[in-house]
Image (cartoon, rainbow, N blue to C red):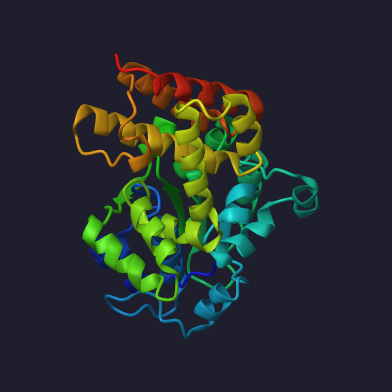
Length: 355
């Protein structure tokens, strides 16, 4: 889905955008954009990158959109803008521009041969960035590098990037984007100025989503609003666009069948890994978190299909932690079949009895 980087489309990010523009002349060379998933951190980073490269940024608004730098930027041909991301982000990300820019730093022929996209920003990508970043800027006053999701760097890549953060070339800015900055080494976080994007309140998110889905059928809009309880509005819109929102509803029905003894965990695992593994992990993480909150009476939006189920909060807490661990190590080689079997067996047991 192509997304205009203009921040007027994301009203909850506007205050952070205005603060950033006000300090544009004194920005740190290392920026870390953080906030919950699905709230337009990528769009913010892209708009900021264009503004920093623009020859005549408009006061209080950002990039002019008319100068040569802006035209090169929007055509995905600006030589001073560098994007490092994972193959999964290239395939599933919302932004056309970043997908096109990252081709400079990925082995396209190897990428096309893989059935499953890579989930890591590699040390080779960072080393190539360092080599190119030390060359002179071509058309702009600055060189900009965007890494997202930055927490997907492996340890060697993070160590290589640290050297660039410690000794940046003149007139260069590195922009890191992460929903889980705690996964980044503390040495990298300490060398970046953090820009936090807050999530919208539920009413704002609902109103925004309705405006983005004017022609969607009623059942799709209903699924989208339900998904807002556990996902950011930008992610919900993306899930609607690529069909995962309705697939998530099927996963929920499968979960109810599993809890009622009508489905086998191992058979479901074989079916679920046919879909994007990380997205299914995200679904399970949100679901287990919501069930814990609901069981503890702290406002979780438990699905109607599961509200009457007995629940072991201790086992659900353990499952939540286990899913989080798999999400963290998913950047490394992993037997997805065995992992999904383990998680669904644990989910079945957690929904079996209250303790």
